[in-house]
Image (cartoon, rainbow, N blue to C red; front, side, top):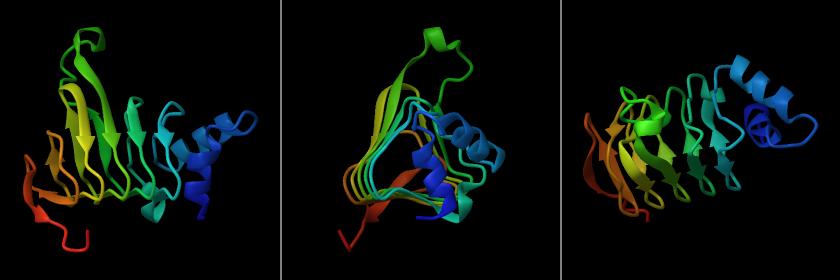
Amino acid sequence: MDFYTWLVYARTKPIIGKLAYYLLKALGAEIPCSVRIGEGFELAHGGFGVVIHSKTTIGNRVKIYPGAGTGRADIYRPSSQSKFEGIIIEDGVIISPGAKILCKEGVLRVGRGSVIGANAVLLESTGEGEMWVGIPAHCLGKRKDQ
């Protein structure tokens, strides 16, 4: 486990949690303590520029590259008026550099084993093992290794 990934897991620990959170933030990754993260998570290349919304849940063996993020697609509204409920990233997902996963209403789910391509802007839920690219993102096909 590299140092950055260790900080991600350490941010939920009782004594060193706050220090780990702020150190991770100083290194350029914003991952609030409320974000639940499964086993085998990887913050690739230190995750500089990664911003994860506090209502995100991340499954096992998820890999997130620099500049990627999750959040609300309706940030023009006050959060009290938003219909956004959260984002669920299932097991084995790869979120490529610069990709954004934005949800306007309800829960957006990124299906198990999906790949979100570089700089894609995902605005809808995906199925399992799908590859999504573009702005807005569209399904390019299924992974052959799934």
